[in-house]
Image (cartoon, rainbow, N blue to C red; front, side, top):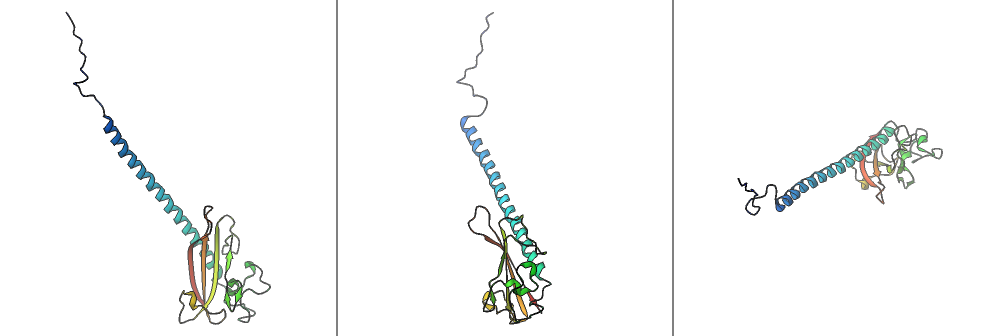
Length: 190
């Protein structure tokens, strides 16, 4: 008996598997999906970084708020005769009233103070927050208009209403200048 060799005719039979075009198309579809996942993950991390910075900024603003809440508006000894920090008040540890936080005073208006590194409510520096700073400004405002508009501020000691404004800044190592992360403002009356 003669056995015939049965070899498939490659021209007539369709090869099992994927063609080159099918493989290329599948690669494009899978690659697009992977890129979309990577982009979504990157956006998540950027939003998370922003949320962390905003939370830290509000914490630092509230530290200054807690520090100033119990202080009188003017010096207990000199009253409105002296605005700004007195000669013997050389550091934030010596401040005993709100107008001490006005910084350099010109024509009754304070320039504000910047704390870099930031401080906590116990007047201690927070050294482990590089790039962060706090700016506090103190203004007198009319009792009938406590607007946050800086144009409506009055010289220190002129009214019984004071507005305190805290701005918290952050400067990342990649930035040339700090960015304002949050601003907190409140009014105190006698």
